[in-house]
Image (cartoon, rainbow, N blue to C red):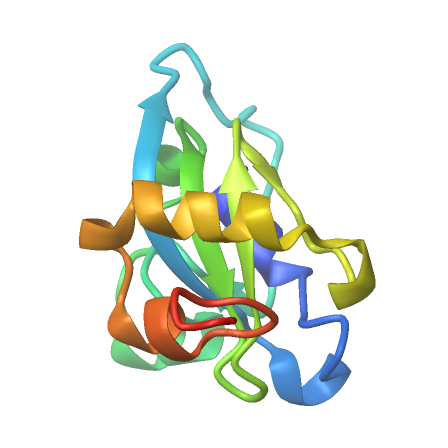
Length: 137
């Protein structure tokens, strides 16, 4: 998953209140050959820079450089997208975010994912995340 995808994603349950989703990165892959074409205007994201974990307007106000040239080379291979509004979490597996509704998720798969990466996942997700967590019966 590209970091800049978070500029467009929101929690399917919360819509406006579920933006931006919080990203927890477990594993990344770097593709050094990726470059931004000269004729493309930066920043590539118009609202939110998940690479810096801040809004674009805040970066501009601080006079900080937007790291598009560095960001475009990185893919999140494994991670979690988390909605702080409703507490739902969505796994990122093999570079693909799985933003499925609760009724299409499988408890066994979700808890296996949480167990596999338990030392890299915050307690708020492991113990209280929706729809499933490690305390789910």
